Length: 119
Image 1: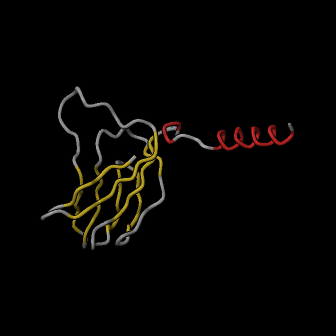
Image 2 (image 1 turned 90 degrees about the vertical axis):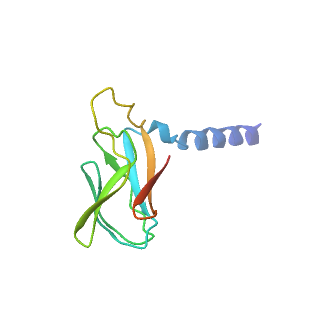
């Protein structure tokens, strides 16, 4: 009986420690650079990530403004650039990203950059 109680207590403890990503308070984003170029002064919305090295991954940061799509800006040799698709125009806007942890993976494409969003 004591063994069964210990096993049940362990399962309950492990289940309580396994917090779902959707339970995150807010939208947390990190950048992953899959390009052969350093992404200088990278940012998502008003959240700054600094320089992201080649094949580098940043820490997650809370993005305080609503995000409607995967998009980031950065500089390459002092020139402003970006990756992904921004949302512009008049409402109605699509729904913003749900609370959770997201990776915006910046990848090279033919003459531009794309962003692959993973949750």
